[in-house]
Image (tube, rainbow, N blue to C red; front, top):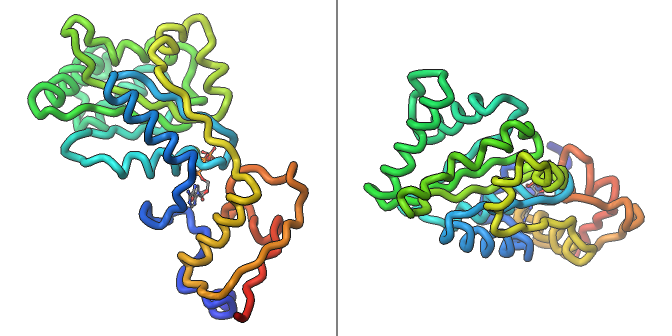
Length: 248
Ligand SMILES: Nc1ncnc2c1ncn2[C@@H]1O[C@H](COP(=O)(O)OP(=O)(O)OP(=O)(O)O)[C@@H](O)[C@H]1O
Ligand SMILES: [Mg+2]
């Protein structure tokens, strides 16, 4: 805690649980939100991809915070390497259902009935967001699109976000995943920060932490070594950047 006093921090800078309102509004976040609007309106899939730590989950978190809960029912799922039945269970819990059966047919029917009821009864569109989607197994990718099949009703009740590392895009190229891939209406590539954005990011976080004095930077690592957004656990920016807080 002594570093807080020394630098005049009111809060820990670079905390992972930074409030949505305190996030630096990056161009990539706005790009994700615009594409999400598009996919929501058409009932399609948005694929968000980028390297580890590039800010994918945060861009999604910020975008979701822009919608009103009464308009959109957001179901957030963190992918696992489990079976499609495990996925349906996660979906059921996200839809506030208590699954009565472990039969995948029953689970799917129950989920679809709730999604349809939300869309037609409460006029709430459902958005299923799957983070770490690169972990989804091939057999899960092959079946996932069936959750979106409401075509007999001629309506799109559900949109989906697949968010993950670039391996996600490779996995979508499997032959078995073609029906799912064909529903991907937009892709958002969240890139690592440029040097200018990085300096803005550091200043922004230090401001949020209560630093009012001028800050200057000196990059210690070559550009090629900078990837992802600095986090406290990576010890960056302390190791990769020398941050100097001026007295005036
Ligand atoms: N716009 C932003 N403003 C402030 N901090 C941010 C912003 N975007 C990302 N961060 C911070 O950068 C770190 C990495 O972001 P995030 O977890 O979203 O990356 P990711 O691409 O989802 O990583 P992973 O591949 O590990 O899932 C987090 O500590 C997060 O709080
Ligand atoms: Mg993430």
